[in-house]
Length: 176
Image (cartoon, rainbow, N blue to C red; front, top):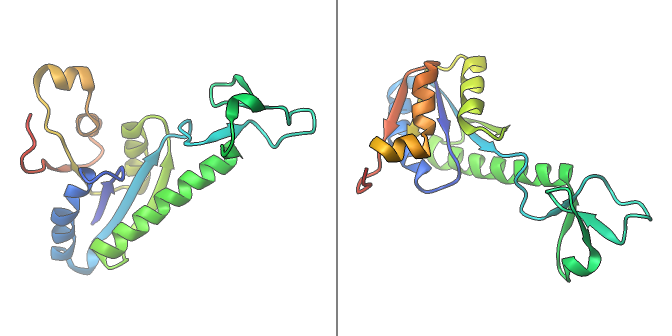
């Protein structure tokens, strides 16, 4: 049995880990756990350039939106990296997190995978189909009514995709 556990790095998403760990251990050696984190490739935490600077570009840096910052706009202490460097940094940070979760909750036996996509649910669905997972375990806010319609729901999108059964946990004390 393959169990896919999507995490976003938040304590909320980690509320699935206890129940999923118990579920996995009850299945014996035939259970394969896969931890995934979806990273938005457009989200960077620093300033990035479209490519390494040439001598003619040193006076300005491209922003993530494509506009040109002047060196004076950036100020001191701003880290500048290429988009590839930013992606590598995001990948490494997510992978470190997933490996820590694997070690902490699954004795280091869980597989870890970082997915790059701007649509979290789409990335999870595609990965679940490709890996032929048997179960997706996820924490949910359990929203209902108008808030569910307006805000959408990753869990709801996964249910509608019908790629695998969904094991959802709603954290204690969470209002709907």
